[in-house]
View 1 (cartoon, rainbow, N blue to C red):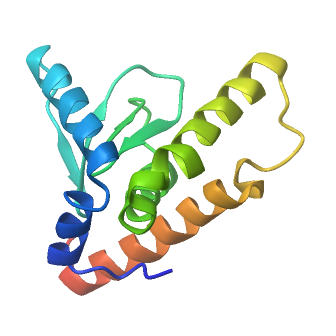
View 2 (view 1 turned 90 degrees about the vertical axis):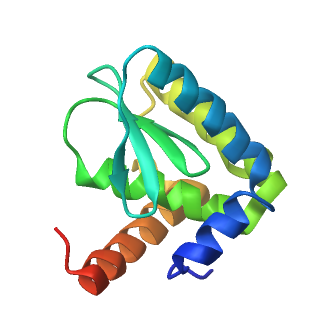
Length: 143
């Protein structure tokens, strides 16, 4: 799976093949902006910080995360954005819904005996996001 998408490829795929998830992200971003939240940029994505003690949630080119600083979570959520470019309209069924269900299952039933990345779509998101961000910031030399 290609991680080093150009900016053009990323946005083209996000707003065509990955439109269902990106459109949901646009709606969420507008709602957050309406209540005074301001987006920040990470790689090609824009993110909002909401709440404290939780991970993140990805919607195409947008993601939401808790206010606790975590490069790992930002990379991971950016990885889900790359997955959206690859899986397109299948993203909600292959990644988003299973990821949400798994998050809540682990939280409610305290099922933490395995690494969060032990399931393919979470491990892949972490790998894709980390590889992309390392490439992106090395290429742009912006830290």
